[in-house]
Length: 415
Image (cartoon, rainbow, N blue to C red; front, side, top):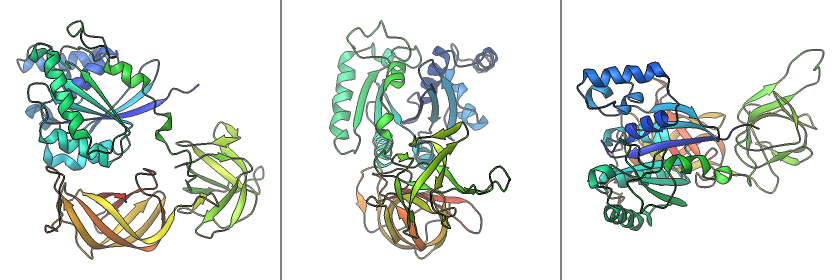
């Protein structure tokens, strides 16, 4: 049986302890090597710090270590007997909003850290909203540095009530609260003796047991074709398979399917994988599908169900997070990448710019610079097969690329 993979990201304001928390998770779950620990122990000693600074495990850039902040997204992998984890340590500064979007785009869980001394601040709201915008299904609010507030239940309850009031505006299905001390390890991997009033589980218990099986869309069948498999060998003389990663729904042998963009119908003759043939497949599996009929399909085409098809249009409305120094240009032409499709597109209109601090829509300011989030319309050179981002995070997301520099300039969520 394969171990389930959970992706989670950290969010919150600067110095809320995000890197320290991940360091503590890695250390207490025995997921770091002895030489790694000795290296950060030596660095901590050289810098005159008390104890070992576990934040150094994820702050890999020299500038991050010098300033004691996170600048780029740091990915770390670790595993326990129950699950495998990929964690994205995202920066807290406003000028790195784009890094937060990048790190959180594939996450099942977002850990929002709040400094118990400061309470909810502007960045807490901003990052919680971005987590909501990115449709991260589970939000864990870690109220950190409880050791500096004498492990006060009153402080915890006050912050919990304030965040609960704010979260009513967010589109998040599941919110969980845990009082922790990342520095001391309270309620991270081991239950805290200092907070007997807290009856819930530790953060590690939550991460190991939160149900993520239903986070994928198993209803709307979407299979973007990535590659046509033609072995051209005597053993597989007539083999013609369509390889890709399932973006939604369940594919079964014998199912009737519709092929886009042609609209022709066929049946699934076989589902192949590296380990052998399957009777059925589902997200996020990568498979090769063989059809009963010979049709001319290629990269960018999509296999769907007859009575459950995506929207097909050249005109798209989306929320965009801008990544580039050069501002978004109305009537500007960009390369658009969506599932396995590539095409050119032109920006039609900027509907509004989102004020991330107040969450209000600014209808007047149409200058979309780096880290800004805006609602825009685009027109593509050919029809796109898509769903809303809320319905399917894979078929509902696009990236924009500058054709001249090949830089990724924006990430969009289709409305």
